[in-house]
Image (cartoon, rainbow, N blue to C red; front, side, top):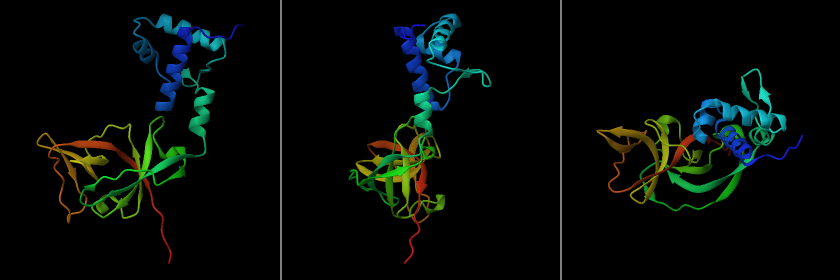
Length: 207
């Protein structure tokens, strides 16, 4: 059977791959239907059947869906990849931002959110010690993740950089210090959240 995909088949296959990369699983029929703006499942089902017959996808009977595409599974199962270390961010009072790539570090892919961009920042200061973030820790920051109340974020506030907890007070965003010796930060003119902290690395030094 001819394995060349039609334009519509290729578009659906690309959507499935992008969705799997971001979510670690396959989209539902409803999600595929909504993405392509069609009202009936029939057109999607016909495309899926054609993709299966051409060997582009494999049905997952156990989970009533589509198995991970081979190229997506290889990416998600890869042992490690490199993230850039983007300088130092203060866990203290905000200081002038100086963002640059210091180096790169190989990390396991299970340490980051699938399909989203992440980078590393080294911590300077101790304003976040009450949530377990200490001097010289390397924070994993996801730049594609939207912040929610309670998230620890890396942010540019009024032209200065800091790492703090994202909270809302009286309808206003506040960057909360997790150390009673430090004051919270109330943005005056500008706030740009660079990303949400999703993890950290810590090295214990022996003298």
